Length: 150
Image 1 (cartoon, helix red, strand yellow):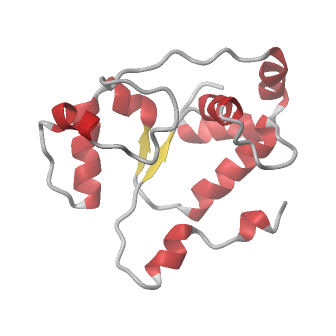
Image 2 (tube, rainbow, N blue to C red; image 1 turned 180 degrees about the vertical axis):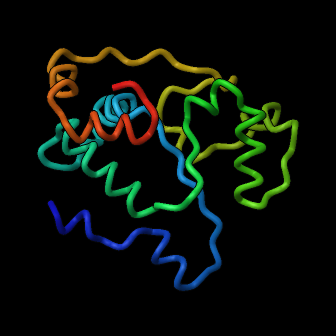
Image 3 (tube, helix red, strand yellow; image 1 turned 90 degrees about the vertical axis):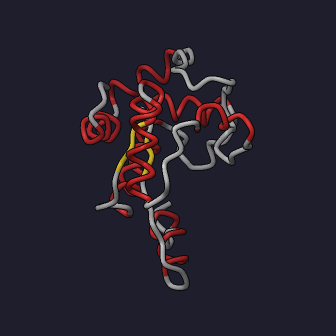
């Protein structure tokens, strides 16, 4: 739906009333798409990786110029990335964050979770999704844009 992709962003709406500091966090697009599927959150049509990638590109275009942080870098080196995030958001860095993180419930905690910040194995890729990935130009270009292997 082209109209849905032209809606104002939350950031643009809030920026009219409040000073904002923002970052963008991303994840390997196939992994995030598989998570959407697992949670039955695919609310767009067609519900393909190609359509998802088109929308992901639009999201990145809408937030162009902001610092981008990759989930995979975060789980590989949490202290390094959290310190960078804090710097980008002009927040004080607490080196004890890993001891404290399990005390807080975050809105993004909708997937696989645990007490430790660690990489998770990729969900099983259904054959039809693997085929879509190979044929989806937008998915291929999105992976390239974000520095991921397709």
